[in-house]
Image (cartoon, rainbow, N blue to C red):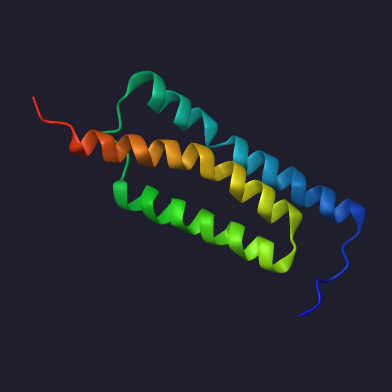
Amino acid sequence: MAVPLVSPAVRGLGYLAALLTTLSFFPQALKTLRSGDTSAISLRMYGLFTAGIALWAIYGFYTGDGPLIVANLVTLVPAGIVLERKLQSLRAPRR
């Protein structure tokens, strides 16, 4: 399947959208790292979300969609951090 030609303006729009949605995950990851509190975070949601982000990145590679690749690989970092902390909190002994 051929990748459709996209104008520089449309590609720029894609990168801007990717930047904004990607940046939106960093506050949660930073808050989780600082506080260590994951009690209000859904394990199922973050597990599904993180898997979805990884699959979107793979899809981006197959389609050659730069904004999709960049956004999802970068978003995978804070999403992975939050998921890892949530899993870690579930393994910790309860007090």
